[in-house]
Length: 396
Ligand code: CTP
Image (cartoon, rainbow, N blue to C red; front, side, top):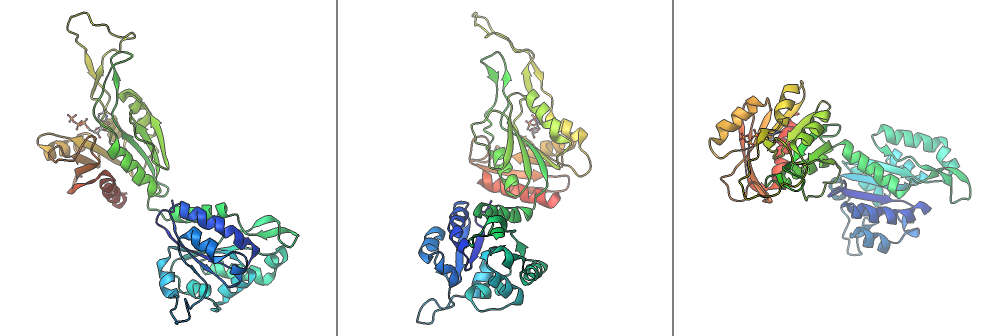
């Protein structure tokens, strides 16, 4: 969730500063890049060595880096960050922030930052209730800063009440919620199919295909990373479920049909990427079929088409995506499939290109809609998934 996010953590002089060591460690573990700016008094509570070791970056406190006059560029730092979090924020710090008092590196970065700012107050209960503190907090909120509400409990003074800095995991949770609310697919529901289906001949044998599910799983991962709530109905696959994706494993085309269409009505976007068997044995033998030296004929009957049924049920505002694998007249067949199944987009897999298709980590596809054809040249399945999702975001 925080992967690649650039965070400045501003630490000010409160006993709660010791907890920031845990916060820094956890942020870095979650993939964030963390730079720490500590005020002089913060360093009475936690050492620069602890913070620089945990953040893998120098800790900044003063404008000047050394006696040669080399300075810390507070404007560059303010522009670098995706989010500035001031935790703990003392009563004194809140007052300075509310009044634009620029007497430390941290305040200079706060005033120059173009990113959003979160602050986690920490102080004794009476200081927290004081009218000036209340007013400063209100002012900061009115300027667009985000308050991380303090907790209630025992305070360093021996008193008990509101004013304890929120716990590091709560602070991180609010940071994650902040970033996720900004994701382009936040609030969108997606249903997807991926992988092959197995159609039972008898208890040990089946008709299947070579699909591994890689392309569908890459799409599910990308959609979830951009905030969508993804339900992945997967046929047998050795792949692990991508982070944030709700997966339901199924085996046959019939199970996939039931699972997908039972949730299709609520979906904003449906992507049917599974290589669903087009035929299944008319009957699956209860016992293992024994050989008797004679030829064996298995009667096959068509499976129900999930994509075509979804196309019939599709309502205004729902976007429907299918996949196609063709060996000849690729474009014409794919366009025909788009119309026949009432899809909004067909992702046409190329069989002609080396490195594309089943089992490979790369793919090359053409996106076919009623009005356009977009070729996505050979790239990793992850990159292809990113490009398909960007296209869908523009259409949603
Ligand atoms: N599909 C489906 N349910 C089925 C069969 C296919 O949802 N029972 C979906 C696939 O997930 C895919 C698209 O339909 O999105 C593929 O359509 P299909 O007609 O099966 O095409 P191909 O397999 O490419 O080939 P053919 O035209 O020969 O059937």
